[in-house]
Length: 90
Image (cartoon, rainbow, N blue to C red; front, side):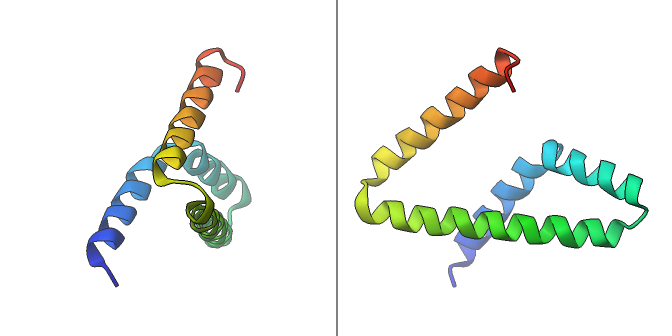
């Protein structure tokens, strides 16, 4: 296991998820349900599954596309999402 990749991945995801819509949804659901451990388990499983899907898709994409093109596609996707948020579409 490459501990540097593990640490970088953990740090990146941890910082990216702080204060985002997912965390706010968890706060709301835990407060409404009065069952915080169930909300934690559901959200943790969802994040694990979404991460697995992301890793598998990335693994498949790197087999058919160059890494530079994948990075540019991801950057373009973030710019489009940012524009949609800026225009209040999302």
